[in-house]
Amino acid sequence: MGFQLPSKCFCCEAPVTETIEHVFFTGRLAVELVSTSARRRFLFAGLPIWICWHIWKARNRAVFEGVRMQGRDVCQVIFKDIKATFEIQFQQMLDVRTFPEMYDTIAMAGSQRYGFLIVRWKPSADDRLTLNTDGCSKGNPGLSGGGGVLRNSNGDFLVGFSTFLGKQTSLRAEVVTLLVGLRLCKARGWSTPLFSQILQL
Image (cartoon, rainbow, N blue to C red):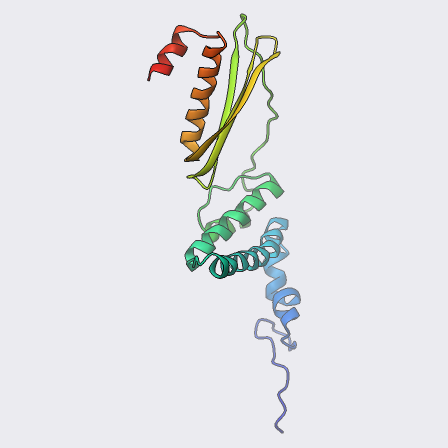
């Protein structure tokens, strides 16, 4: 008759009209994929959002910065983001490197769960000083900085510092920040033979 009628869904045994909502949300296969686990539902709900977001970012980088990203690079960034989001949401670390591994791990019943332990800074004993430092890099390598705090055995604040380190890797930022802290301690008169040996390296 020349009329295009709705297609029948080939995923369902009963004759059901194949609409976008049916195929991706209400159909037998879609329901089977996501209804068995809250973790699987979370994965399927979040994945399209991350895909669209990173395609948009790649497009903007190409338009405004002239940087063309390869598909595999975008996929890797999407994987890292959805994995990190899942781990935060369900407090479960995933030792996976690909989407199939992640899906299989999530689908497994009784997946191993990891607990979290709240830790806090504890002062040292015997009138010793404790220097805590941390360095970071945005981009690795990229713009980096660090800082630290020196406390006595009672936990009292003695001195703190922060420093800009220029373009460094994250590991180098950590080490250089520690050296800056040790030099500050030596300049303030808090020095030991071990400090002097480290600073001579």
